Length: 95
Length: 391
Image (tube, rainbow over all chains, first blue to last red):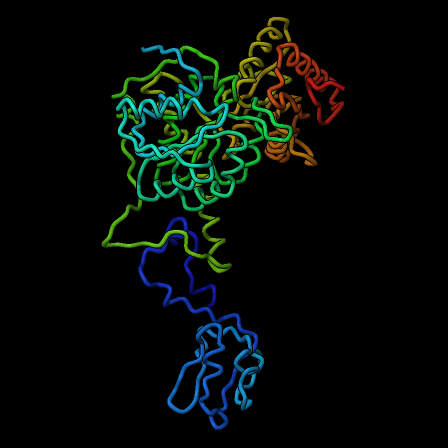
């Protein structure tokens, strides 16, 4: 999210009150990632070690492989480090 | 007119009683204790419909007040010195969550060494906590400002906590004749609180959610704006209060400032002594004046500029030390207010009265003579004078 999408101080509710229930679902926290994990589906054996180790539940299970939810992934690289098949590569976001 | 004999603390308690407060949570501490002690008697005697929470510390007291205020209740607490210091964390939360809590503070020195007497170290240490700060000169003012404080705090454009400060012992424990308003008069002036948010099961809200770099700044900007809004709201409330009480209040009070060459600026009870000395010096033909700030936060910059327009020299009295700072807190603010003014007066700082050290008319006369000398020569002899300390 860029700052232009967010309300200014004049229109935000007073004192940081959140007026809507469940609004945290709209709050995406993966925008400060420096490295992006890329999963090579062919190498993935669906062992789910990455799914277990991910500190942010950002690994999404598919039937035969895993994917990453980039809305929440912070790019810590633990998944890539733990993967026994080297199926996850960390690629710099800028590239 | 009804004149009642009340100490400063009792005057605050009486005003709180008439302000129809829903909840009081407090912890006793000298010299504030009488405020909450007297109020607890009103509760025990069934004179008020207030829930009174006895808590285990000042930190808990203000925490309870914040929760209560967020439900839409009118809330009061009181403290002093170490108690205010223990509340420090919660002071910022009260203002950040925009809780219009009113707090009586019987100003007292901070340890160490331990001391129970009056100075402004406690509230000056909480200067930037986002609370509106009002300083009373006597019991009458403490009474009037407490009622005014609720009106100002709860205004929709303010929604900030307000502290009503009175010098420990000098005001808190001195009995004076206080002209109190009739209950109905206070009721008409101060309606029940109309909270902007209340507890509504159909419309749940989240208070105190985490606010990261992408939002926090905006909420601080809101607070800065609310603090500035306080100026207009306070003036309007004071005009209305004058109508019901006949007593005039505003951000500051000036004495003989129209043609004063030399003046003293101070807070609280010292102003009374300063005016008395100024009267004496005026009779001798010396052009001196006094500025007393009722409102310290938000700082009445424009009013200070107007009051100091014609003076050649100023002594600013601080009853607290800001260790290592160029001046005490009040003096720093006065210097800031006047530095953009053409031909700003010569200013020096007087640190005085720490730990309840008495300030005598002779002390103030000495300072007036020094300010007059500064006005004549244009030279500040010492930027900071420690008045009444043994060498």
